[in-house]
Image 1 (cartoon, rainbow, N blue to C red):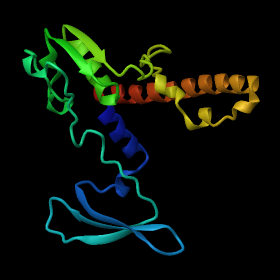
Image 2 (cartoon, rainbow, N blue to C red):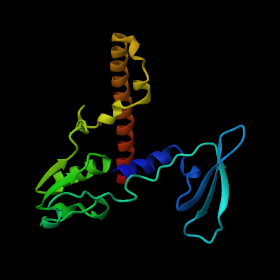
Image 3 (cartoon, rainbow, N blue to C red):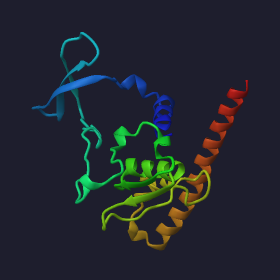
Image 4 (cartoon, helix red, strand yellow):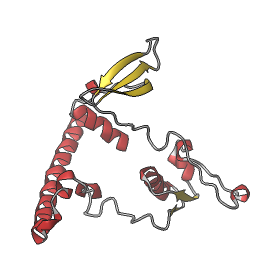
Length: 198
């Protein structure tokens, strides 16, 4: 679902022309001068092309938190009779069938695994740190209105000095935002259904 969303987002906003997949970055260095620029040494992974350099104004390092797996080490791990798997090793959710599954962690990947375990497993548990925070329902505003509709730059940029006015502005904005995006989502689904029926 998440991967499908990213592909649709990139396709809708024409981002694919700015993305180069399967490229390896060997070196990043700052270019001295008036403008802050960066020189990258890159090459295509599955090709015969030589290394070449490109210059960019900004760099974001987004290698992902699961590139190098982190496995918990706890007392009694060697005597545990069940299976201990990293999420990278879970290829099919039917592996959870008739099993009691404990998901360790509270990030996005752990949340996905917990949801899958609750749907496909016998029972599902989540183990998180004591001071982790809150578990928020994905659809706390009803079907089709995910909680992350509330996490918008506009909503969170209203100065708190406005007090009551801020609350009213946020309430109005949230309602308009929900109606607008739910309408777009509904229309997109209708077009998809019509296309599949043809």
